[in-house]
Length: 332
Image (cartoon, rainbow, N blue to C red; front, side):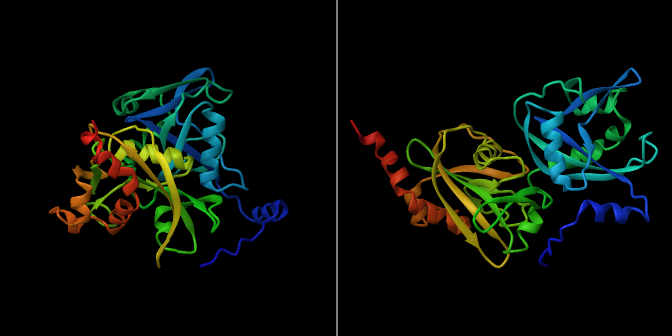
């Protein structure tokens, strides 16, 4: 259904509130880095305690926009992407100021360290065990420990992952979930496609985990969707780390638009060279394997029928990239 995009004034918003008293809406962010959670220290009546960064949602914002603002204002110096919704809970009885609803988002660390500020005077990264056992953590945050565990394990496979939404000209608009992106060709999103070759000109492919919603068990190049808070370059680097366990320079090849009855996706094609070693997130990838490009194009590999069609198209398109590498051993 097309969003009518009603324009609500502040006067209209205030008028709607005169006949009811809604709860306050809060947004909290849980930034994870290598399995540890970022917590900030705050003082309440001179008593220090640790809590997840968060704040009130403005009436002009979406929850995702609030999460991005919180990242900027309460964790300055840190860069992270907003990955997915964890939970929505009532804080009735937990907050002495007002009754509210708190929306928790899981964020994935990209770079930097947060600087102390007016809201949070100190920061620390806590392991799961420290998070559960620490007596000076805001109880409502601690109450969500199990949900946080589930969210982190499924961080890259959930249909609730929050992506960057763009218009038909590839200009950023805001956000949408992966589920929404894959159900409406009228809404556009972005992804990075990463063709990695060895120094001898073989191609490195990953077998999609069997729990994937689309093409489970099929062989594919590395790649993934741009999530909220990432640039497309950061998306490419993040997907390489998750799916192949490597960090390498990438050459941008081109941008394209893929559309079908379910989705509209701007994809950014990159190519790079690596001999590994390769590692991967087992929630994302079943295994990684190196294939001879010519054998694969000639369907001479046992796995050839399980390789996704766009991989063959990219191999053919990128001959000028990988074919010279196959000759390197023969050059005096």
